[in-house]
Image 1 (cartoon, rainbow, N blue to C red):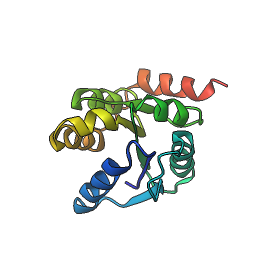
Image 2 (image 1 turned 135 degrees about the vertical axis):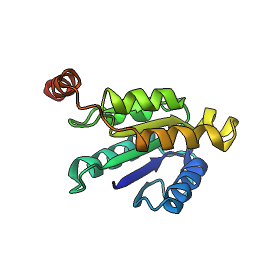
Image 3 (image 1 turned 90 degrees about the horizontal axis):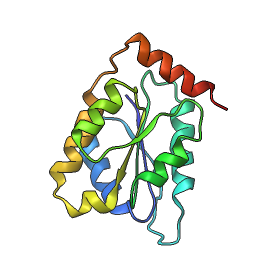
Length: 151
């Protein structure tokens, strides 16, 4: 599983922590930016970079983790791309449902909330999202296919 990670200035510090956390667990991680802190950067740039990487990857199960202040902006931007199923998760239960039912391939998290908590919160979300399999139930496959047909 290849993981692409991106963040704007609000998620910049947390991105580095998550990237190190994933590397320690032997996940291949590619940072799609921001590569330097810039408090004037814009989240759509990094959401698009991650979405393009997921869509264009030859990996069997490519995924992305995105971080911004509230998480919502990154998810909205990533969901503009066909084949992307980005979700905002603020709990392990959110992450579990997103993977099991929706086969989410992009996880967006609110850096503001995650930084206010201890590391256990974001770690539990990331771990759950990475290890929960998609159920593969026909109704979920059908619904995900319908999403890709929306123009």
